[in-house]
Image (cartoon, rainbow, N blue to C red; front, side, top):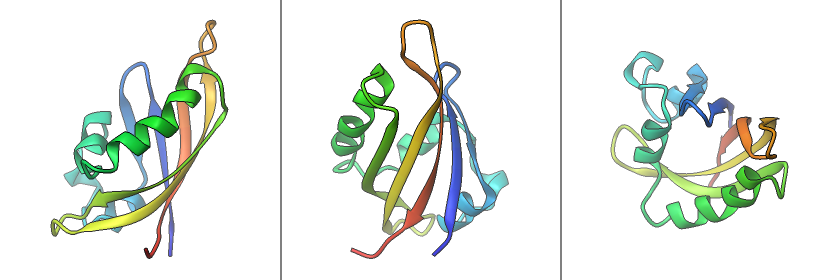
Length: 109
């Protein structure tokens, strides 16, 4: 198991996916656009409600930390379970998250 680093600029929707994050899903880093939409396109449709439920309180300022178990699509079209954890590293004047960072670990389910 490897930990895969990510960083998300919520305002610009830009994401930084570490090389390990990309390769864990079967991609070379140059094959993925480092953007929120890329990540969302990889999240299994049945996992999206769970992810958004866990992210909501973090983005709004109620919580500083995020943790969620969900499925991501591998380049070969299979889905892999991941444990994703993150934290807010910057908030705006209203307390809403603007930048988050975290790690994603492939798990067996």
